[in-house]
Image 1: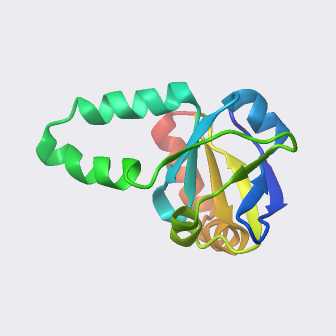
Image 2: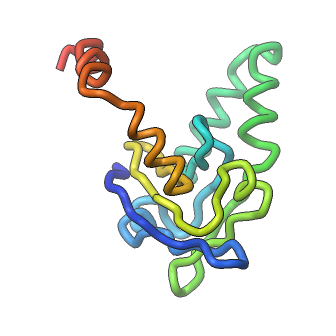
Length: 139
């Protein structure tokens, strides 16, 4: 399970260190793709396969948008000896990654956020809407 929040910097070449705990959980290589809410999704090979299978099982009329969104700009990433990956320019632009980035664990995937965007997203969460969501879980 991917959990936690980690702050890192992306260098001018687009390289960023993936938190070591995430590298342990994701494996030797993993996949980066556009995510929801302006972040990037980071998926293990098993998670990537699940996404592909679920989208492939949908009717083309419903799947084509998801196929284009998730797969067109996706890349396979393999950390170097320092634990860095290269985030391609198209994905950096999509997520607005400039310098300060935040990696978060979101259970079955990790996400990479521009730190300012992550902070703005968090400011929209209230105790009340979290409590309402918890009611749905019967937790």
